[in-house]
Length: 633
View 1 (cartoon, rainbow, N blue to C red):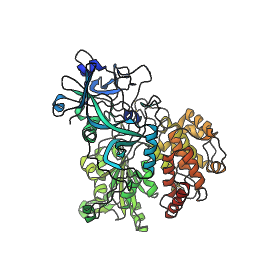
View 2 (view 1 turned 30 degrees about the horizontal axis):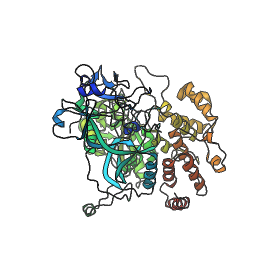
View 3 (view 1 turned 60 degrees about the vertical axis):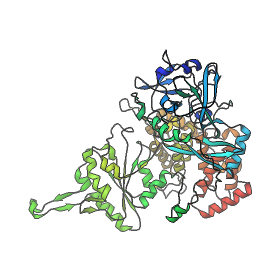
View 4 (view 1 turned 60 degrees about the horizontal axis):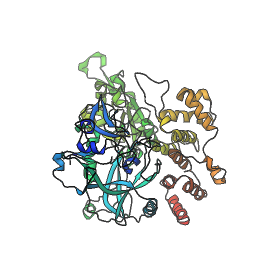
């Protein structure tokens, strides 16, 4: 089905669809849309004709390079196409609806309603949610065989491209539900039950028939906005060509297929990550895993297997550091438009200045360094890290073609050792005004890994023991105080946009916070305002110092019970940061720590703690199993 959105002339004015004139332009979100990040009205008087609180909804028309949007009061307004907090109200033209026949058709106040297809929409009641969660936790909740796909990026993050996450559908008492992680837009995110949505909490949404407003012209438009959290387009501007936009791709690729009724075969879930191989899979020795692969594991996979790849990500996200975690002694080349060719590919000299005598190739310094490292430790993969690739012009990028694609400097010259692996890094044009497109041959033949601005991933990495400073026992990648501060204030301090036309005095990003962390460690825990201001500016520096006067709970305080309810963080990311900071509890301490997390930080953070505490230690896994059994998990 060719789903679209209504155009402005179909919503407002004399030419609006008759059914919209009768129903009104105000539109409400489903509970699913609210959980996924739909902006809702802050005015309790803004309601649809059926008395539902309203939201903001996309149209398919452009408004001075923005998108015509239905505001909470039903009037037209314009919003940038790259935001995620506008909800989606799918529509179908007569050419499509003529092929189908609606169910349960009814006419109320001259408005024709009908049902067709189905989607997760309404939050389950509290009692049902408790039952679902208990069965889910014990792995005894049957799957229906159907899945829903949404964007996993935070609803207020407008820079990161679409990143699909799949939610399986479960069955209980003949009804079907999905369990969705909440990413509300703001404090106005209210469910149909009257509850305010809590960020980071999982909600159970019930699958129900989709209700459509049916116009006499043949157009169908969903009565409510069915989902949110998807960018209309990855760029801010919109030229009116709906057919090529990101949200149209989502409608075609995911939405239109996932609302189709499934043949509901009950599947008992035996593992959340692996499915039992089928007979044909076993024939080829295949096991299929649907578990998402963390970026750090992707990077490790390519490096350990000697496969060249390109690492993408905005400036300051920590691309270099992620690679250094695996090879601290990497060899690097930083491309820039002023770099000399001989610095990259070496040079040829001719004895006595006579070309006929044959030239002698002089290798570049990086090549000599890399070969020496590879020869000294032949059982280890050594990284050649080529940075700022996309900030160099195509003529400069061309110098690394052979190195990246064939692991040699040129045909028959400068072959890289077998235990060398090439890693490229750079930004896309959307992430850096100085970036250039990569030539197609180079881009196509590389594998690509994308490093997003994700606070939770950064917190997890930050809570790990520092490999860059092994001499300092107990030192983490990010000082716990910095991790807690960033987690508490989240998007306000984690990353600030850099405007090249009007640059700010200070720019914040993960690399900058790593630098601040290093300063605190270097100064033996003593914080000085002038040192902090040099990186984050006076306002953030003062806020950080004030925060440090009442620091987050320590492992010792938790073990001694020396805390009050006011000491427990309320922000979702701050709870995660505290849970991760406790990952180095001893086996004797882990029981009390788990009780604290379960009571005060939630089951999701307890699962994160358990995974971080065990790591790859089989003995710890056995210990944890005993602790879980004695505590009833």
